Image (cartoon, rainbow, N blue to C red; front, side, top):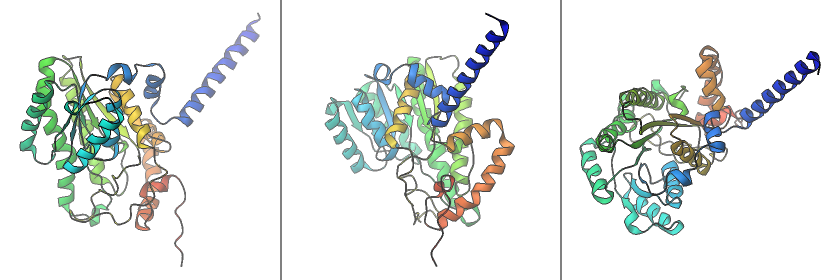
Length: 339
């Protein structure tokens, strides 16, 4: 074989490889490490069954779907949120779709802002199950309002729920995991923990705070290699996060939630979460494009990312004020208002 032919074959192989990777990236709905773990890594069905998992924010959205998928794996569940009736509904469905028994599911109403109650709640879980294998910090609220129009009390409330409430519960659970020298702390962040966007300054700030905190905590726990600290970063997902988001005032609700159908299905998001948990991924990005692309651009080309965010940011605001979903500005042109 001549050298020219050998080099031609190597070049062809390299081009094919790059082409395959490009196709994978274009079709990706998670970062490449996560998708590799889904393809070649440990299966949630093997790794997560027979564990005790405490899920906050379990009465709706991602937390609710997570409860359903975990129940099918045979996982014992602790379901927490402020809405006791909704938690009972979720529990009953878990019992219907799985082989779990009443004793395997604990409904534990919890207010993340009532930090004085977190220690007692943790003791209640340990009384019931004797251990906490995984804590999923999923509870929190979003935001849809401009900074110049928003009362500072809103930002205080966001930090109380999304940040302080999360680290307070983690502080109560962590000593148990340290004593056992094992466990997983899974915290729901967001792509907003990596980037920023108009209308969500307070929400993005709370998620950035979670990244700073848990990345620091991971270093402090390095001497406990079996305790995994994970950050899950979803993009737009079909849930009621917009419906429950903060507005300009604490008591005000979002008037126009817009169409959510174009967003990632909650079931797919949760499946990728389970893959992340089974494979102990430190950080996982779960999103369709263009939000997944934004994560990479913000990581590796922040100046370009800022320019792109500014270009699309004004459309995001206009969409929201026109009664469309703000995130739809990244997918299609804003609909013109009829005269």
